[in-house]
Figure 1 (tube, rainbow, N blue to C red):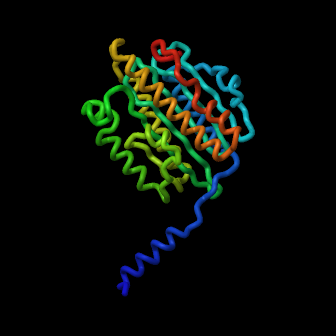
Figure 2 (figure 1 turned 90 degrees about the vertical axis):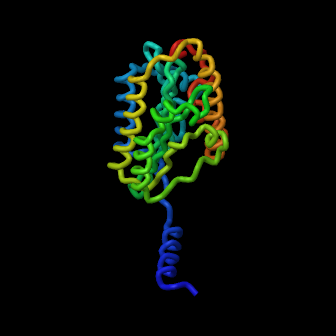
Figure 3 (figure 1 turned 180 degrees about the vertical axis):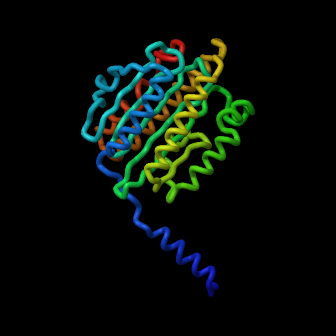
Length: 265
């Protein structure tokens, strides 16, 4: 027989588990699109971006459920490129580094729900030939105590936690800082998204160039990371949109297997 406190906890748990989840809208609101534009503007200020024709060539610049644009640096230095996209009520801004600087890739997605709450997915993807955790300096720089505290603080704001990706390929490249939280008010998701983006940009601006002889290993792993990401996009988006998912996946991933020169193609 359950005691009164145990019974109360059990009842509360059942109530929590049976709450109807929020559902996504069909398109992002103006305020979410404005947030996406402001985040992209930050990257543009730091790195001077130019839109390319990649998504128009692939057919994904505008589609039934959204749009996407692939940006490259005006003077290639830091990046392979930036993917900015909307798909239904989700906006995304993914910054893919080139091999000149040992800074993680930055992935960011925000989904708007019908109860005016937001789901946040963000990560900083480890790179290079050295496994994460084996280089203490890299661990401290990008996955240290300050980032752990940021992660914990963000997690306390959530009313739900999003399930991991259904794609093994996506889960394979995720870092320990892969944050997947839901039920956020706009003020919280706006602050967290800006803090995530600011951390990435600060890291790139303060990073030292790596020796040219080491860049080949970054190229090889980056190619694999992008391929796994692309495969994951296909698996997720085809399951949701059918054949159109292939087009959306290609446009949101950007060019795969770039011919790296400096930081761009």
